[in-house]
Image 1 (spheres, rainbow, N blue to C red):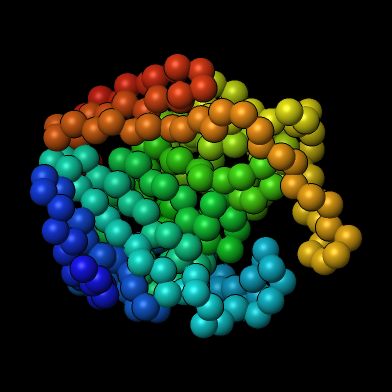
Image 2 (cartoon, helix red, strand yellow):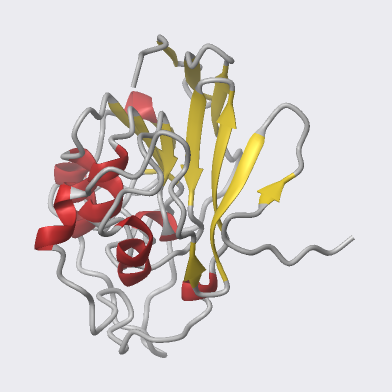
Amino acid sequence: KHTVVKPGDRVPIAGLDVRVMSSAGETVKTPLPGAGTRNPYCATFKPHTVNPVSGQPVGNTEDEQSVGTHTTFGKFRFVYLGDLTWNKEFDLMCPANRIGAADVFLVSRHGQPSSNSEVLVHALRPRVIITNNGPRKGGQPDAMRILLSSPGLEDLWQIHFSFLGGQEYTVPGIFVANSEQAAIPVAPMTPPQPGAQTPPASPHDGTAYWIKVSARMDGSFTVTNSRTGFMKAYSAVNR
């Protein structure tokens, strides 16, 4: 069965309330229950005219068409907006925050600075952020500065160390699922320009490790790093 969702639709999954926040270039207009307050970060928002990652003019790409969702499990709230872009985040979150607060935010576009603006991340006030980045995709300093300075953030977890962020813009290894064979530079690495001379990305051989979120209906949850076995519990809070 194939379903084309629209902003505001519900995705029927037993035990969950999954609502579509964005789809086909449009964003939801009606705030979620408890949301809808003025977003103070809209006043300083600066739209992108050029994609800071690709260097191409922003426009009607596949990323703007992303399906983004807000999922609740009891009092637990999870937000993932796919590859929704910086400018579309403004459409979703301004002038009012239509989502409210989140317990866990899975970053957009692998944690790249073409998404993950203050109007989204800082307004969500996530307790935990998870970056689904690669060694050379996501985790750039401009993105990490926004993510790590988000109000109310308790921890940021990464799928990989990021060469683009270096040790200056990363978290302790216990929060990183996959370590790389090459030494991680202290300073951020300048991304290579696309083209025939671009060096190949470092291979990831062997076991691939994951980060797991286990939520309870009271709003408490745990996050586990499968590489280290480290698990951290987050108690329920009133938000």
